[in-house]
Image (cartoon, rainbow, N blue to C red; front, top):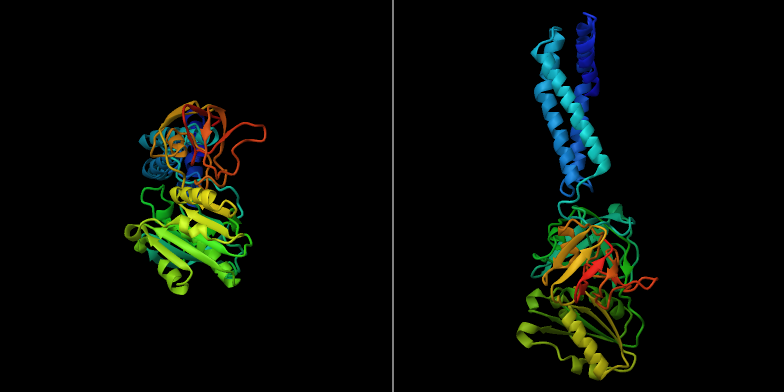
Length: 444
């Protein structure tokens, strides 16, 4: 574009009467070589990459503006400039075609310079936070082998290594990060047999009120490729003479792997599994059929809540209690163990943030943004809507990717967060699950 503009300026200001003929001859040569077509193809490729890449048009306003400018240059070149070049190379006398070419190349060059400035300055932020940044780049590709509904709104997904590759070993209670085709990253517990390295299994409940991760997982089909991390375990299974497992809803997923490992080792165990109704309880039929003497199902719609006191009271010394599920169930279990059997070890993992409390004011100091975090949403979502992009990953308060240093105020984080205070003594805030009783100022 700049080269064509240079030719036009040379013709305009040159005193040589043969300048125009020479310029249009050179321009015709370049046109015959397809330089213009290649340039426009390169621009179109940039548009395609920009629209689909990690900084794609769906995320940032500056990228959207840059792609709009580039599209305008491509369209103008094809509609106006190319016919002008063809006309001038066939007739070297300036006229309307020369004026169109001169003005068009000047405007096109200015627009491309503007696009370059946008790439450097990145003056505008994201439309909204769609894809979270990964905490690590140790992911590898796996293939979806099978997708099976295992309860109402719950799909079981089997993942296998590409080209028959063995998957990394894991222990019961481990989870993986799964990077979905859109770029969303989610954590899901492994519920397959820990000794099986031929494949992993996860089970995901569809949450239509969520941020899209579970819905995208439910759209996966056999043959699809996704990237996952190596398994990480923040809910490890220790050695005990006997075990009591308690699961609520989709919290059954890590418990299934524990049951498989403990049963394979020949250790005594019992599972108390509760859910709204049996149709929504993943793996309920499989568990109850395979181990009828070990598994007790409590569909609360039919039988009410389990009697936790009766389940805990007669447990022998050394029994390990492992529980995963919603906060009310885990809080009730913790209270029961504390009152009835304080000598027993209780290990829990929460699948969802605790009960949301009152709205509160949140201020991001560096971004000069202030938001009101409603009772029905997270501080992370409120900050994203205000244009404050905070890196995040698990969104359940376990990975620590989104934690922020507190400048003023007192945060209220759930008890399961990995680090509530920085090494220098400053409090930390986890916007994915944390709340505050009053005004809170964070370094963001």
